[in-house]
Length: 250
Length: 223
Image 1 (spheres, rainbow over the protein chains, first blue to last red):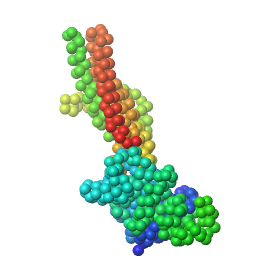
Image 2: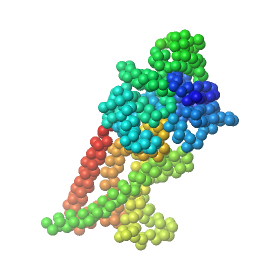
Image 3: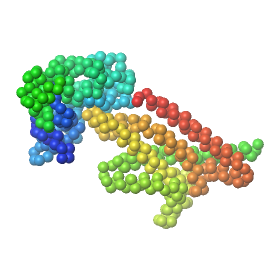
Image 4: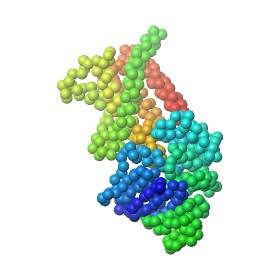
């Protein structure tokens, strides 16, 4: 069964058509990397999948639940209750982390567990400790985001996204805001998640990383999916001219 | 010696009202300011316009005039006699003072809070939304605590101004400290009561500065 099913997604900002009929399915355990030039609609697609933007037309299913569907001309969204449930099924890692600066690392990770998912503090703390160990920063639970490096902050935000045990995690250019020497730690964590068969959609500009980690690569440009296929094939041997031109830049 | 003691005594009895106005105004105007800030940012155009006009009038006319209006309008405009009405041992003059101050200061606080709320990065809302926090959880757990830190210096400004503004209550014949000092000065034919009152105001604001500085330092654990 597919964890994410997006069909015929259309999205405009005013007169600007950003997504022009996108179909994207992600199977359980699959890692999809979305690449392409800036302004091609990658981030918008991710924001639509994560409920941060509403689509104009099309349908989205996450974890077997319908987020929205289109019968007539306009997409109809599910009710509040379903929306809340769907938000528990995915995690999102932002380009610029968006950690809560006034919370310690621990509270950043546990706050939603306790106050949205009704876990006890002890349970939440246990989840937090396990995740921080996995992120290679077990001693940082009481630190505040401002005292961490960018790479550490991004790993905390990955831990925060993982805390609720989501079925799929979305990454929006997770290393773009980082200094080059800090990206390695973040990429290593994502690689480990891939090895654990975490279902992931990663918007990225790291081509070699995308080739190594992703099962499928989706190349987007001008609001459409130009090319889609097994990672190595798309990166090493693109068939579309636009994909070739884009990859030649790397 | 006796004059000095009785001067201080009378100033202190005025200080009771000064503190009363100060504390009650803060108590009511800060929550009201938050509410008004929300109204000012409301998507509903009618609400936001009404609130904008309210803030404009409150900031654009003298507080002294507003106090007089709150006190006299019920009788002169609506023929309702509130002047004999008493809340506990406080007569309507004091109640009107508190209402006037609250309405005025809430407008200033609202604009400060609005600035703070609007300076919050959109990413904080988005992160909270994706994590499943409800609107009110997002507001009270994520946004407001950070806004407090951002607006504290401006709020300190208003609080200090409020201490001095309490002297405006004299227009409603509330014998706060300034009125007491004025009465003493004319009966003693001396400026000493004014100087003593000035020291009281200054000490009060000194304490406020220290407390607010401490509060700011306390929130410096993150940036």
